[in-house]
Length: 257
Ligand code: NAP
Image (cartoon, rainbow, N blue to C red; front, side, top):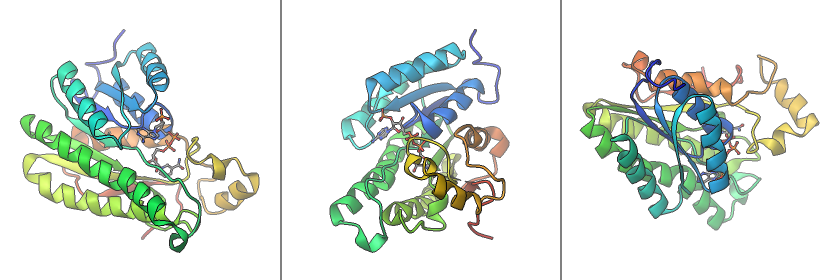
């Protein structure tokens, strides 16, 4: 039985990038359960097929499209196929990111710096440029950028990545201002340390985990599902007066006042 039509996102069309596992998958699942038609995507067809099948089993209205966010044609195809299938776009969750290096910001080679900023920031902007005209046609929409607590408080071993996540906080504000007149709201999610493949180098090292837990008042690492309800709220009409804001979901880790 389809859950579409019952939830607070009923009838909305949502694209979530990098959504075949981890935080993106948890968000896609929640948006689907809350009634949206969801488009899941990532680079590998097998991962897309698996995510689609899992979400179908949960009763979600879902379509899968392979999309490497760094490829112009893939981004364009993602948007075109979504509009063809569901008739428009109401929600974009820009979730894809890379971190191909470990080390301080001064130690980052220029090619790696460019790659990080291309995927984490430039491609998020390019996707936004593609979806905004469709949201304007629908007289509104909601965009979420997935940043990181490291965007507020740079992690020494994730120097360049942290700065790219800070850049997303700025992109969030700039886009929010520009599209507010079109009734498009734009907000940022900044997760703490969440147990996924992406963070496994940190979360599968018991000594590091113990050190991190000392800084997490809730006393545990985050789970992808911990991110999903906040995003569903932010893209729903319940958040109708919230735009240009950044929300930290990090178990109480120190970030800002
Ligand atoms: P994850 O569990 O490792 O999942 C990564 C997903 O991204 C997979 O579905 C993967 O599928 C897809 N993907 C990877 N590169 C892609 C690309 N170039 N284009 C499209 N899809 C791509 O990662 P995660 O931890 O959920 O991270 C998601 C977001 O949360 C990232 O923006 C990350 O910076 C942010 N974040 C994570 C944490 C954390 O602790 N985990 C903390 C703060 C922020 P394919 O292999 O099929 O492409």
